[in-house]
Image 1 (cartoon, rainbow, N blue to C red):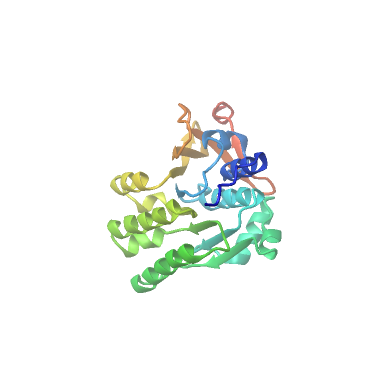
Image 2: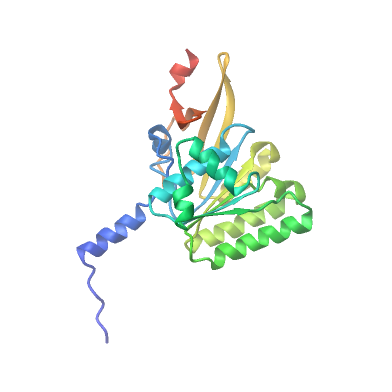
Length: 248
């Protein structure tokens, strides 16, 4: 009988380091509300109003993941790969080096075609995530067209299959536009995913403010204040803004 090797201190440190590879935007107020960040081996749903910063915030999470050592595959349906790189360079969150080094892959996955094309793309995405060993984080921005091409049950089935992949070790982030789902679908989707984030544009006083609401994050302690306001500024990127300052 072969004796089991006793876990050495360095092994424990390595295991702990792997468990702590949270995915966070790197913005203090947002990181706090996320409980430090999104956990690995999880499915996250990010929904947002038009112009609420959904894509930029999602790519900020990708940037944070890359800094933590993740290898990321991003499927974009609303922009071309070159546009994504140029946009993030403009927000002082450069992704080009990671792209050139092969740590980041950008795929153009347009779900806006007909029903048959959309179904083929969604099936291929799931197959790719299930078999891929080159990347650890998979992002789809966004699945909104799937909602218009299919009924609610197809969308929920797609999320459920993503959750199955997350349960066996993959980390997946999926985005959609808030206007595309009703409250019933939102509640059902929330019950499937490990983390649910919602970006909105709200009116405070005479100003329009972008806000991030952390609906839930698996393993994070729920705080009373789960909303943070922010701006998206050229050359700066995402910057949190205190509510008191916003109302002034």
